[in-house]
Amino acid sequence: MTTAAEKERVGLAAAGLVEAGMTVGLGTGSTAAFFVAGVAARGVKARFVPTSEATAAMAREHGMEVIGLDVAARIHLTVDGVDEVDPALNAIKGGGGALMREKIVASLSDTVVYIGDSSKPVNRLGAFPLPVEVSPFAAPAILRRLSDMGAAPMLRHHDGRRFVSDEGHWIIDAAFGEIEDPGELDVMLNMIPGVVAHGLFVDIIDRMLIADSTGVRTLERPA
Ligand code: 5RP
Image (cartoon, rainbow, N blue to C red; front, side, top):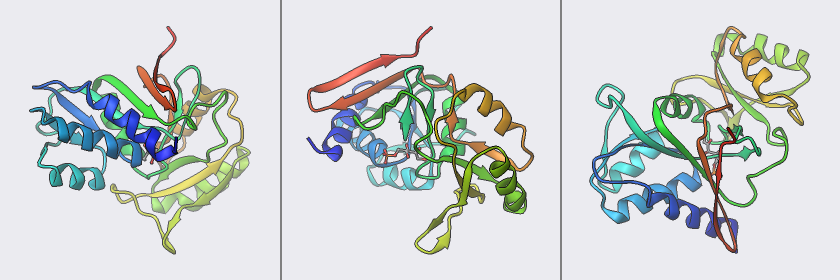
């Protein structure tokens, strides 16, 4: 089974979690796109809070009702992809550059269900460079700081141009190698002035759906 087929399988499985009347956070990326398409195909009457302009455009194209945080008093369920997830359901996200809105929407959600193909589970986070979203003014200082912390940081570019997030920030991809203590790194990164968000999602995911060639398995966050 191809990776794309696994993404489709898990996206469609997660679409079944959406019920009429819910407000649902929509993730960003190729796996989340299958979820969005699956929800649209089911025609459930719900309202949706997208985590990026790209996902918002996709949802509108499907005729889904898109709302912002000014209207969404409560988000019942958010479904999103991951770049890596460990056995404690801590994750690295932000490969698509939407990490800040993704973390905000997740933090406002009653239930956070993330989805991935069979390449996403890892024993230790860190093979995937950690996206760190920064103020452009602070970027040079933060690049030095991340180097001092032992990472190999690089400003993200896309199509030969500097990548700018939907929030107008730059992204540094910081290769840390194996991250021994995601909780400690989470706190350290949050304390750096100019870091507006980072892609370590610690104690945020409630449930993870992973697809492989045999089906979809569910992992719950350990108590
Ligand atoms: C976007 C993300 C994505 O969810 C993550 O990069 C996974 O992407 P994909 O589903 O395309 O593999 O965090 O910021």
